[in-house]
Image (cartoon, rainbow, N blue to C red):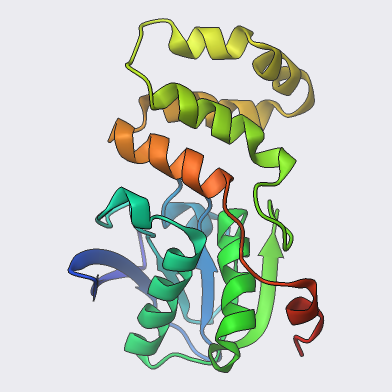
Length: 212
């Protein structure tokens, strides 16, 4: 990505990719969504912002190793992000993200408040609850990908009740779901979609209400 320096972070023996755009003032950590990568938040980060921008490719995303598939969770991703911030000596930071990145940011603010001085949640797919209804299409695609690949699986999903509903109500969401059928590695994508769709930030409404 233009303007970003890639740095390596090691966690649990895995190589994770941390992308840093130098700047002045408070550090802004802005995270990607499920099955995205660092280019997603980099594309929407304001060009005229002079702040330092940091984004971590979560496990199984972008240039980061996946590691054990049963360890993939919002809590694990958040712990990795906290370690990355600490490795830079960057906290407290303005922390935010898109969809899954927003869930990670909310968890980080509640569990590691010393690392966070501001919170920006873009298109949050989770509140405090786990397995929200809006994540069911992702879960459905993940369950398809967990089975043996077939030539017509994408078309079958697009023609399903879920596919036809999203074509009318959320065509951009449907386009993302369609793209997951060609994302590799397939087993990592299937696990991400099924595990994270059933997951949540693991925080309570009381914790959120107590945020300064």
